[in-house]
Amino acid sequence: MINIRRPAAVLLGLMAALSPLGAPPAGADETTPSEPPKVELVLDVSGSMRANDIGGRSRISVAQQAFNDVVDALPEGTQLGIRVLGATYPGDNKAIGCKDSQQIVPVGPVDKQQAKGAIATLRPTGFTPIGLALRGAAQDLGTGETTRRIVLISDGEDTCAPPDPCEVARELAAQGTHLVVDTLGLAPDEKVRRQLLCIAGATGGTYTSAQSPEQLTNRIKQLVDRAKDTYTQAPAIVTGSGECNNAPLLSPGVYTDREQFSEHRWYRIPVRSNQELRASVSVALDRPLRRDYGVLLRATATDGRELVRGTDAGSGTIDVVSTGLRWSAGDPDDEPTPEETEPAGADAVTTVCLVVSNSFAPAAATGGPGMPVELTIDVVDASPAPNAPGLGRGWALLAVLAVAGLLTGLIVGWLTRWWVAVWRTN
Image (cartoon, rainbow, N blue to C red; front, side, top):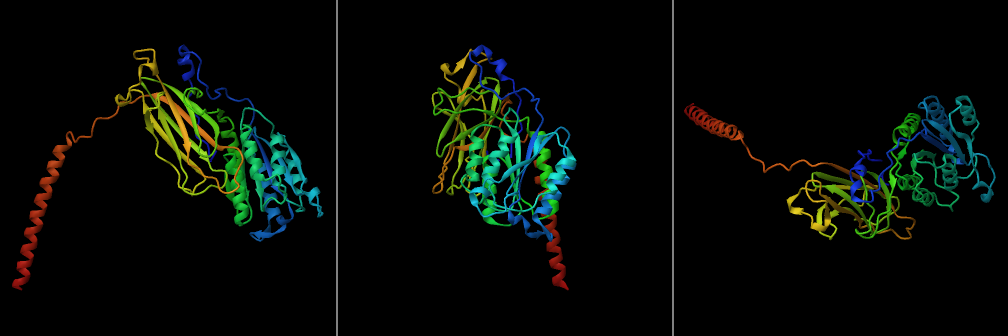
């Protein structure tokens, strides 16, 4: 999803408290991963990288310097790999050139001298098989429970589709491999920007345009450094249902799902009588859509009665749509029916149904898997609603202000009349 940046993981632990209710709710993984953060840099070395338009230097030389600086400043414990595309085949045979992608530094603890040596030998050469390189990078990073990051640096569109790089990114995201692709553009070209933005949006990554050596170096460092902070926060994969009755039961946590155009996805949340439900949803817009779309998050009772709804989100001009809601189980206007709660008393539990819906309309010939959805669930102690606002002791202050205003008006009026009288006599 969109992010498409990601929400911080919330407190987990409702599962144990709800064990008397039968089957425990699904929950995000609470185990701290033992794997180190893994990142692969993917560099476009196609012929267009010869252009001398970044501070009077060639795009490839700026990228090489940035890679060297990143290798020197690599965060401790991070495993880094480097893959290139368009770096070896100088000919015109497209069938051969579109297979030109190699990993020059394997993912793992980095030998800095070996990595710099491999980077120094790169020369702009051939085609631009971005889709192929993304699939290769995903294989390089492997699978696991932690989030992996790909940082793609390119100055041009893919020249080898199929596979289309946007479709490849959507396929990788749909596989649930916890893979995030961040993209960096080295050319001020609108078509390149749209393609790189699509790739990033499909996996919840970011797109940035780098127009100077400093911008490129700083941004790559930020993305590599981010891996050590975000790799432990991989959302749990969940599949919402088409109705509340058979929806997955969720505990507090961060979840990821995919939703088709104009679809409704349902989830169930147990909420005790002294608790408050807080939920938010973000949808990454990873493909062209018609304007005037939106996302809606609602909470309902199991019989379909609406308890609360979030503000409709969306305008047709952004790349991630987010909305949220809060609901307290003690709200007297939303008392549950007897069949919705168990057991009776202070520990009564209400099953709340969350439904995520959208009003997306695809642009022509837009397909692929559903839109990336990230759902954040939290259940906290309820705070009593405040009474209607009153002034309390503020009445005295209001009276003082009123008297002061009246006296000020009288004095100003008297001085004005005196000044006018004096002016007329002169």
